Length: 172
Image (cartoon, rainbow, N blue to C red):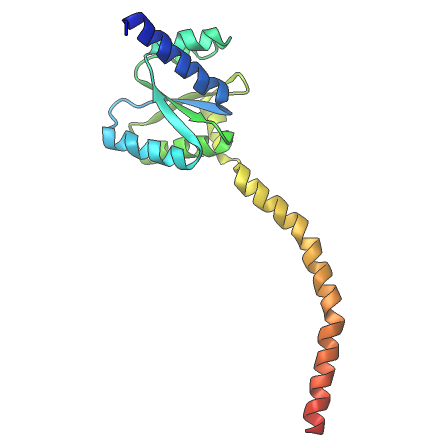
């Protein structure tokens, strides 16, 4: 394969990641070991995300191809791209937690809904509840009235059985 074809393939793959992602986080990873990067990859896989490293020039081409130029100034040094494909918050939380644990992994900016996020906005996004957490809360809200209703319907039966047990003890 020629060098030009290899670059075109990398750009194409990178664009696919960008287009599938709910959110993208850019982070400086200079100084991280391979083991630390593998740890990040594993955590992201568990959250429905991934991490990719690509040359800044190729990333710039891919971003510009899909109409995003807001990140051009952030493409300096060693930049890792964290993709949150299933849930915008889940991958962002993993990246944020990893940055807290690893001083050599520094979040630079992000991309959400085609717009650039500052570091503070990335932190705010990471602080939001994730999709699963929100689904759990919704299920709890929906089930609570049903549980109350079941308890209300069961109360007369419990009282009746209690009364029968009391008569049985009194008679016995």
